[in-house]
Image (cartoon, rainbow over all chains, first blue to last red; front, side, top):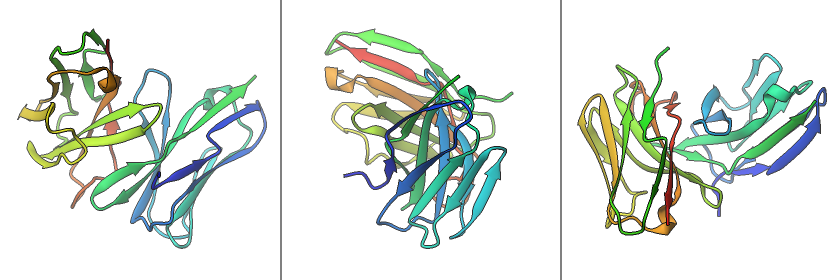
Length: 109
Length: 117
């Protein structure tokens, strides 16, 4: 059983479409991070959200932390092929970073 | 452009052989993590160090895995003897000091892809 459940696991869309990826847990996290990983590379930190209800924007990416600090979402507007990759959420709990299984996103031109 | 470096990038070895993976953290980062990534389990924390001292290695099979930091510029992960189930990508990450436990900012290396036949 994963502490952090991400959905969907796979997502294939056309360039220009919008999408939302979810990260859910029954546990409370002191903070939550989103990473993007490209093939053959390590994950790269995109954002950290700390306060319940917090919304952060990074160009076309919008990140939201749930009010109860148990879940988070990543919304991408007008997806581009360069957005293709594995998106991982990770929660800080008990002094450790716990990762979700990831959402594999493919954006076709 | 400061980066975490890992060597080797790829390693193929036979079951029973010793494997050593190396990591050079970003200069000035005092916290180093070792992760393992597989399709089945995703990204799992194996161990981490702060100021070269091991803080947590509960995610690491103790009988065959060992992690050390001989100095501030080198972290090693050793598997002896290796088994086919150890096949995975092993990532090292480093972080600047962020207070207690895990820093908010972890910088990952490119990984070592290990295949044990």
